Amino acid sequence: MSASTRPLIEMQGIRKVFMTDEMETHALQSIDFAIQEGEYVAIAGPSGCGKTTLLSILGLLDAPTAGSYNLAGQPVATLSPAERARVRNRQIGFIFQAFNLIGDLTVAENVELPLTYRSDLTAADRKTRVERALDRVGMSHRAKHYPPQLSGGQQQRVAVARAVAGDPAILLADEPTGNLDSKNGEAVMTLLQELNANGATICMVTHDERYAKHAGRQVHLFDGKVTDANTFAEAVA
Image (cartoon, rainbow, N blue to C red; front, side, top):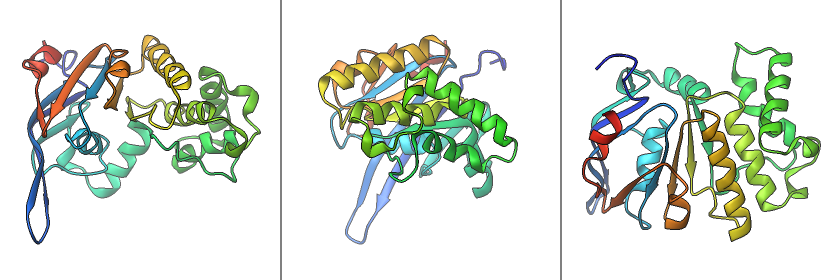
């Protein structure tokens, strides 16, 4: 496979086992999974099927028990803890169900916060990226407001802006509509579709089939296994 056709995300034989004194839980079982640059993929399935565990491994927040994971052609297993943190900060954008905004920081300050850990960006660079990100999600007019002054839908838009401000290789969204009503949920789905249309690679976890249909491709999990045949083959074809 040439570098030009290599998937951005490539997982083979991924397993995750959680051990306790009483038992072991097989959260993921032999997952083969790939995402091409520019794709919008939904990982769908019922609660407890392993979706969030898979997303945590994708985001380098957890490590698999077995299997291989390459991100942009690099084996993740070879990264040191410091390198993993650097990749998370620069290559992965996270969108959480609970927004995870800091209440006593302004909207602009929340969006800028992850950028402050990057030594390659000046203050002027950070300001430009924050302004551009807020403009992309339609929240420029709220830059000086605080999260408690915003609706749930607006807070999630700010969370999306924070995720895209660093120009990551991929956006990982964990139930991004979970704390929103149906109207705001659809608005966030429209926003993600617009970001994808403009080149963003997105992987979204959802238990709601209505929202999964917004993605260009769906991968279904059940009891820690991919239930769609040829998911990996189709992604790398």
